[in-house]
Image (tube, rainbow, N blue to C red):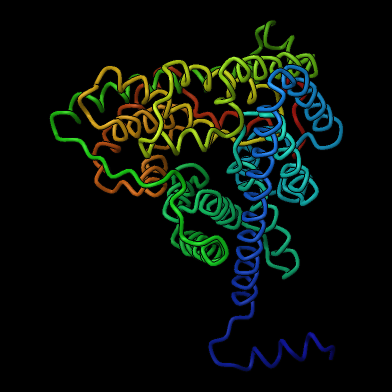
Length: 437
């Protein structure tokens, strides 16, 4: 009898002990701890990269006109050449693997792909790309879970990927409830009780790691403003319709560049380096013209707007929408969660001109909700994310009202959900289809 067999025999002799269940829980716990640590490091690297770029462009205002397009081209070329599964957000990859578990054992969710995803996303932030950390964190989380379950010889299930993805969202934003909600709305086709326990366990463990090392923080700062009923009845529908239309158009644009058979879009897909160059030039020109407010995730600008410390010009929302769309369609790695929330803040800023007598922070928050739901079509996740990232529990009902309206309007503009549509591009054993970017 080998040492492993002796140890198993000892544990099996314990009444009620299930060694398979113990291995599964150990794999989930270790994966969640590892994810929490990597999420902290990734967040630090992303913030550092964005800080370096901001300092550089403040001293060399026109240098990004050359630097940003060059980096876009280089990142897209590297991605296409060595790690095609690292392109884009990262959430569609996890969705594709959840539907076809064979993909979990390909390069799609491998650690080399995950590491490439993180590093290339940081490089994009070093060049001012409008990308976020949450999508890459979700893909990395799934890869870590797969590695841990392989080490413990635990069979892979869709629930493992769902749990990893949920923990990734929770770790990226410090929003445990939003992680669970995202698992329900976006990652899980069927949310069984066993999966629920796995999800909550992974979220709690990764959240505790993040909380212990980074402290208890509110991502976008505290927003204490509220709206009276009469204001909600007027502003929520306007924010929902306006945000839903813009978000739906954004989703249609991304899906068209990824899947449309129209000659115009297929022509760009056949020339990914040219597309990356054009997108990089758009990001660079808009960034220079905006004085740098559209660079990166948009986190700092959004935080100041939510807290009422800064009134951005009316063009911020449209400008941020343009650079986020350009970055996303370029094919470079990077998430769209945080940039979309920043665009939504710009949408809310536009609404404040229509409702000058209402609290600015509350109106901006409804704008963020309307646009974000319009993009991702996950109203429950959007409301919980914004409630947790702004500590705005007093706005819960206006947020839900806006989210419901935005979801319905966005569906009229773009019938297919963005992440689900993009996930089709990863459905052939982790390799991009021939006709997809």
